[in-house]
Length: 311
Length: 284
Image (tube, rainbow over all chains, first blue to last red; front, side, top):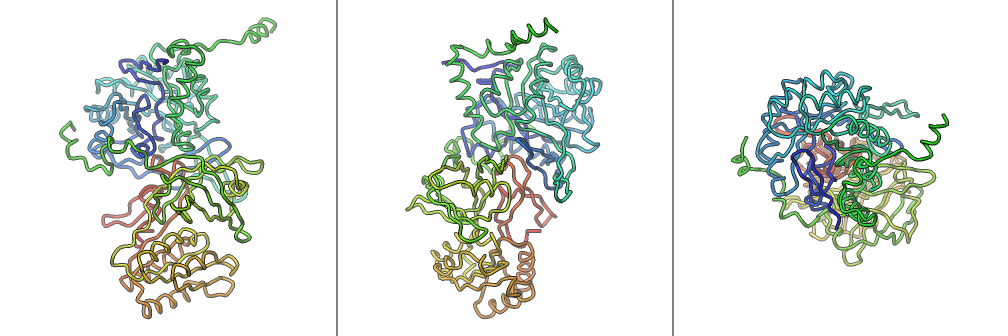
């Protein structure tokens, strides 16, 4: 049987399939055994209670979803009392996603949630749904380095920096996160987008703009994964539009050491366990003993080289 | 913030070890029949295994509507349960063909399959003190209240049902309600007796003559607010089944929230998880 395990810094995951933040919660335990996936990643929490954005908070577009949920949060105290104990019953490592409005607030919050039961902190420096027209720390290398450095000094836990596809400086942002002490990168969050009802003229999201996710996002975040994996030495976790085992393999070939599955879970709540089983079957069919031969194995097609020579 | 906090968890969830058996199922169900019941509504009957037939009136399923030439829905669509029958192994949905999702659904044919997730959500609760319930349904809400009528009948509660629609031919399930022993009153926009004023007079009359002591409603926020007013005046409680745009359907995404009145102010609750059935007076 193929070994699906993968290492993300100090953490060993039994397989590379984990949820994307915001598309996973305790309720999914009513659908399948949560211990069949490689890690658990919580919805982003904030220190204070937040009520979230006005409805409609989601809409569908061709082959994709837009959301502007707005990080509703019951606050840190509720989370530590309720959510962390729930996941303690599972072997899969618990990764908690956090957000804050300033670098100092991020650091203070990271320290507070560095408690037993938490295996890593994913820092949501890229959520485009906050106020200020979707601006985020992960838009620029300088703000990324500042916030990651402050968080690094505040927690002993591994830090995963979740990057944004909205930046034009993805490699520089990735290098800044690495230099500041991030243990892994997650590529990436949703892409800022909007939709209008062409008949009524109504904007489809209550918050006007929201994040695009689902299969339509995949080529963009796959490209980011490839760029980042080439540029940094720390592990990269691919995220964006994954719904089939071929999607998983593409991300691994682009250099990801693990992947996060998000919107597809809304379409089929059993997507993650299915992907684990199909990945195992695919490795067996290809005669591979582990993921190693796949990770970072993408190469130029021979024809492309030929064409390049003629160009 | 330490391990000591774990001992006083007040999580709404049982310990994970107890939940290793799924209670929400995703499966392909065979379509036994799929017929038009009038010009706008279709009835779909699925062959369903026991595991998904442990339902409560008011719960729903999340349906993966097909991709067709005309319609390409991406999200699942929530659909309230019209009927569930363990003896016959059947699960049925009565729905209005209205948009992309239901348009695609309507193209499915008997003999095909439909991917379903469920049963989901909090259903109706018929409290012991609610002995003489009134069901008030408008349009597609008639489908949602049908299983509740059956439950009232099985509990031996004398039932009154007011069915409201735009036209008489869109009144559905009146025979089903009568089979449940309900006194059925129909009102329509065409006949001009479905407005709040005439319904208020009708219902206050029923409170006096039939001793109505609970309201159940679905399908119209106008009628919901009317029942809230009547309920406040007469000290009558009840429940309402609500709708909202959904994405995940099982509580993860927080998309389908609505505000509800609570003692310490309004709170956002998920229609898919804390609902779709809510306390009548808490709904806003």
